[in-house]
Length: 93
Picture: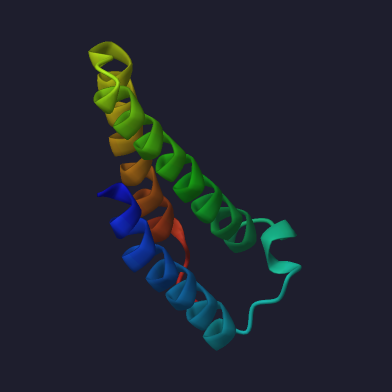
């Protein structure tokens, strides 16, 4: 039930991201700034890539393609870890 996870947790991710950005006074120009802005821009981009890899893993697994499914699962796992590492790399402001 990947779609159910997306329906429940993607809005939470978006809402908390917007709330934190508003609280910190960020603007649309912030992602173009070096340091905090670039890390902040990379995090949601990587999260989208992880979601695509996870969806492709679900398809490959359901289609009986174990090698691509395993590769996509590992890519999704590594990308998820990278999202967390990017979040910890954001400097406290």
